[in-house]
Length: 111
Length: 115
Image 1: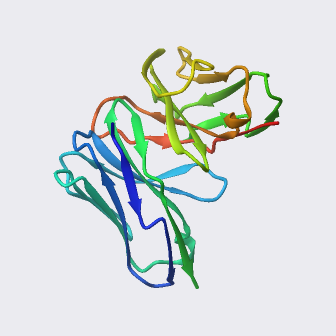
Image 2: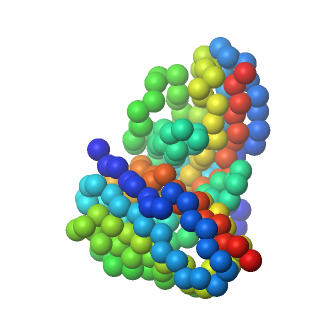
Image 3: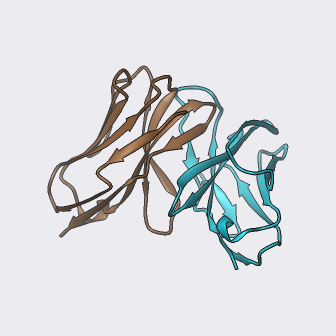
């Protein structure tokens, strides 16, 4: 059974810092890994999708990497802004579109 | 183009009642999945439908059911509601299923409170 863990559970940083969020998973037989953002009381916004054959994906200030063999992914956020404050979730797709989610990292970026 | 649309956004039900939630996927998307989000259990997969067929099912009791129509719209039903069913129910859609390049998009969710 796939298990996904995110560390840290919460993170508070001053504006402008670069930061790394971590995600680990137990079963490396994945289709892909997706990072999402969730604002309080809202749905999930897709940030980046990394296919199983890829090592990284970039979108603006976000960069996500995938090391399937070690069961790890990182989300790098450059030059953080207060608007980046949200919960970040990683999700692994093992079969069909059945995602297994980590518990999330709650990020607070202070002005 | 329009995103994933879920209705209703908020509802309050009494224990023992049943509820039906609706989801309209992004135009052209044929896969619809449902998830339950609670503070204690996080996000958990309920089921996935593709071309009107249930493809995968999570570990939930039979009180939770769903269906998909020919236009890809989907509904999920929870019968005999329990207090523990109070949660945010999220619908997700994607073009297809079972491929590595398949991005999944979520709606804003339906907040269900059982009293």
